[in-house]
Amino acid sequence: MLYREMGKTGDKVSILGYGCMRFPKKGRAIDEERTERQIVSAIEQGVNYFDTAYAYPNSENVLGRILAKGYRNQVMIASKLPTFLVHSYKDMNSFLNTELKRLQTDHIDYYLMHSLMNMEGWQRLKEIGVEEFLAKAKESGQIRHIGFSYHGNRVEFKQIIDDYPWE
Image 1 (tube, helix red, strand yellow):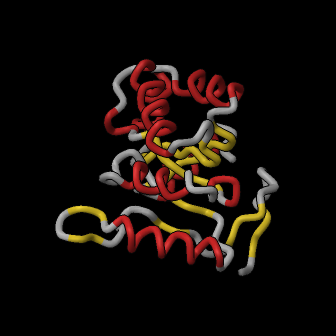
Image 2 (cartoon, helix red, strand yellow; image 1 turned 90 degrees about the vertical axis):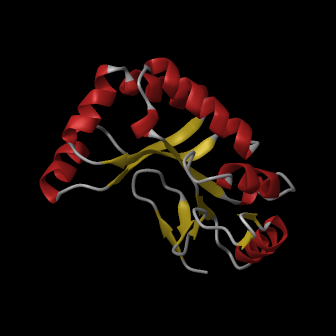
C-alpha cells in the first residue's frame, strides 16, 4: 500500500480509503460477517483510513464492533457531524458522544462537518457555537483533526476554507 503524509496533520494515510456508506447487505440489513471479512482484508492490505458518518444507517455501529476486535489502533476513523440535523450547541455534543459510543472508541481521528453546502450553512453553525465545540472536543482528545465535506460551488468552497483553520 502507498501512503501520503497529510500536510497539516503529519499522519501517513493510505492512498486508498475505505468508504463505509454502503456496506454489503443481507436482505435489508448490513451483512456483518461479509463486511468484517472485507474490512479485515483491507486492513491486512494496508488500508488505514475508514470513512463513516452519523447519517450512514448502522455504519458506525458495525464499524465500531469490527474495529473493537483489536483493529482500532491500526486505523484512522473519519466520521461526520450531521450539520443538517444540528440546531443547537447541545446537539453537537450529543451527536459526537453518540458517534463515539457507536464507534466504541474514545476519539475520532478526522471529524468532518458533513455536507456543507454554502457559506450560509457554515455561518449558521458558527452562530450556534461550532468553533467553541470543535476547540473543546479537540482539547479533550475526542477529536484529533477537523475538516468538512462539501457539496456546493467553487466560490463558497474557497470562502469556507479561508474562514477556519481546517486540517
